[in-house]
Amino acid sequence: MDVYEEVGDSDGDLSTSDEDVDSWVSWYCGLKGNEFFCEVEDAFIQDSFNLAGLSSQVPFYELALDVIQDLESPGEDELRLDQKDMVENAAEMLYGLIHARFILTSRGMHCMREKFLNVDFGRCHRVFCEGQPVLPVGQSDVLRHTTVNVFCPKCKEIYFPKSSRHGNIDGAYFGTSFPHLFLMAFPQFCIDSASNRNFVPRVYGFKIHSSSPYFQPSKIKNRKETHRRRRKKKDDIEDAAEVAAGNNMKGTSGGNSPSNETPTKK
Image: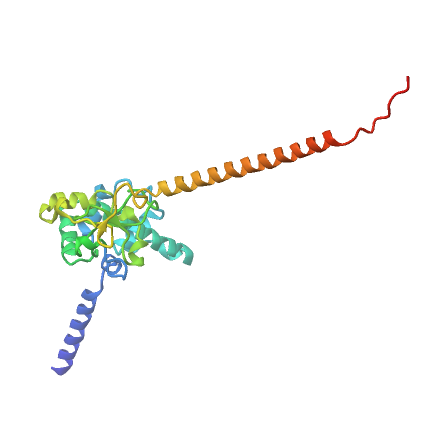
């Protein structure tokens, strides 16, 4: 009985260890620096309609898709080490593009909603936003154009993420529409920006007038340029006066000197 019980326990441990193995998607989203990503559902990845057009954007598309789905590719063993690294990079790229489409769906937005409530995307840098949670956004839907930024629902501005790890993520993995569509789907997270306070520059408690060069730095540049032209003009006038005075002195000395001409005999 003891032998069978031990065997049964070992089988149970094996089954438990098999269940505890994370999928590629869970492993990738759990990496440090990938906190902005949510886990895309398997059903979404397996639907070829959701992947339309991605094969032309990602190298090693079939192999990369097999990596994401934890499938064994028949030609994977024939790849060189550098090619395997390229396939792994292609899998990350493909997952990012799939992720950009998934978060625009209802299921994807609910996943991102949980991350937003957990402040996984960070908080706004602006002082008067008082730690408002932000949302990830890209400035382009095309790969390798811009890195990801964060959008504040309160001041309606975008900023660089605080972490350099997040700053290296491609903005196309989130797209240009996500935060705005998210706030339309969950209007309770929208904040009226009209009531926001703005910083007012002061000197010893007094406001700086809007006509000051503080607000119009071009005035300082124009003023310096005007002074430079005036100085140059003054120097030119002084140089011309010195030249004229020198010519007058030469003319005067020439008129008073005795003539050296010999009188002609008649």
